[in-house]
Length: 147
Image (tube, rainbow, N blue to C red; front, side, top):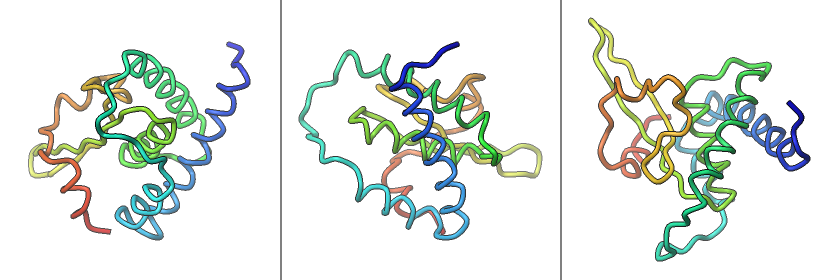
């Protein structure tokens, strides 16, 4: 499949953001990396009405981001992928929510991260998020995650 010039640029940005997130989470931790990226987000109006074209555009960007993650020279996990997708979407001015969930599997506590736009999970090809109990209050939780 042939990508347009803007799609190639999106894949390139996603690749850079994924790799930077992989390194930054190991070096600086989640809170510092999140703060660094948030300072680079455009100012948005919280009173702006929901754009009906936002979800299809977010889904398109999520597919390109997923392709970049599959072909990246590093193996990324759900936190790295969700964090980079969230900031890619927000940088494009699209509404995105970063979600975290947990489950207990035998004696192990497992966690998962995913991104949603207008309540629709984007980076969930297999619907993994359905097996995790989401944490309430995404923003306060993000503030308290350990580095």
